[in-house]
Image (tube, rainbow over the protein chains, first blue to last red):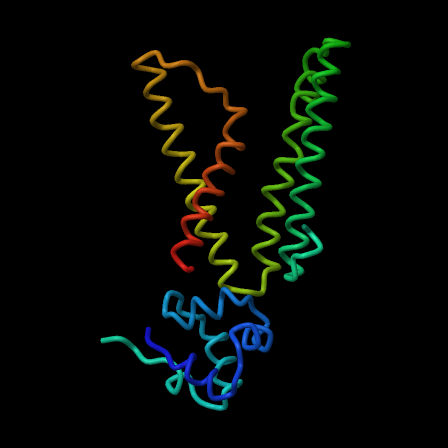
Length: 64
Length: 134
């Protein structure tokens, strides 16, 4: 699944570690999600959406 | 090393595994000493022989506890995949070796090696899974 995490993070000048701390997950988790190697669960996706003040669709996009 | 682990669930898991490993060595020594000095029979022999396996059962139990305590779903996913790799690896090895023993008269592999080999496969799987998400 494609995502805009890197862009959203850069807009706020957050490092992966900053985002990981806000999400209460490891930096490896953020990296795996950001690079599209791991798709987060719905609760984590909602948490991300809330954190960036957007919707899940505003962050993630299905690869067709 | 343990103090550097930031994740509380992982820290508890590592501490519990070290305690289990220590108890396993202690209980194995106690069981060996019991058999050497008092030659127990029947129920007591079974009891003394089971003693070193108890910390291993505890380690398996606390691996399950870790999976329920870990709040980072990605880390949980890493361990679940590694455990599946470990289970698959030991099942494959035992199946192949069992056939080798039966048919080709390969040397006997004691069941006592199942858990250490399982953990070896878990470690190998963990490395491979980690590389995949790097």
